[in-house]
Image 1 (tube, helix red, strand yellow):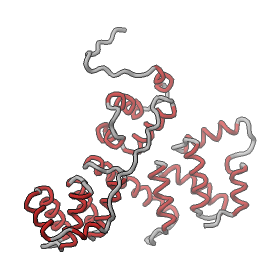
Image 2 (cartoon, one colour; image 1 turned 30 degrees about the vertical axis):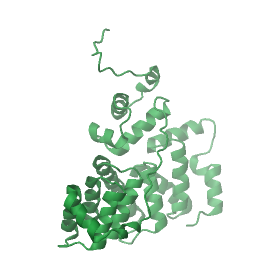
Image 3 (cartoon, helix red, strand yellow; image 1 turned 90 degrees about the vertical axis):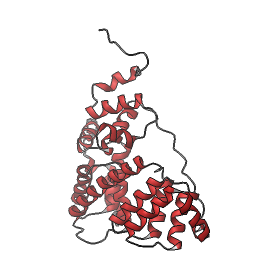
Image 4 (cartoon, one colour; image 1 turned 60 degrees about the horizontal axis):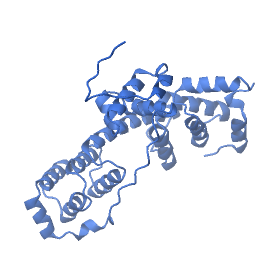
Length: 297
């Protein structure tokens, strides 16, 4: 079969992809082609361009990494910023000069006043914003986006906005596209956490610091959907008679290390393991040891 390809726009795929194509989903095929055409792209940008969820994009990348087609990316060093108390060193003259010479800083000031519902920002407020923009070098659209989001979520406090903007920038959120993708992903994670809160009967109570950390890990860092976390919850309650974050985390950590992302993956993995072992996951050595230790929170 002859295929005509433009000489200046050819995408070359390694032969290794043939081993994974037959089991690949539509999203995985989209991600495969996208990254060979745009090898320097961010996963969040790919998800936006392909109109798929960030979670599905991350799963698709993991699929091709597992197939040996995508190499693991080298970890990027975090950006470093100066002492967070330094913003107080700006003088009124510095601030006035910035307002006179930097149109983007004028825009940041206007967004902050509107979002915080302040007619006039204090000198400390303006110093914080000038530090983020002028000293830390954070793009104005990122600063404005964080201000708007914080205020919309009842975090209308300059100190909180300042720390949040720095933290996101240090985590690599250095463009508005990345910030937008972060907000989308954060919304997905919060939705999953909301379902889990209902499942465990948390009601309106505030989550403990341990719960917040683990829930963010399960849905964020490990990229699990609600169904697989619910499955871990059911195993936990069946074996311990109660909800236990420690017990659930041990199960989910094992599944994450095994590359399981769905309940079907878990069932298939356990079925494969049981082909040479008579007892089930719930009764294996790992769970037995866990029960003996009690896994008390």
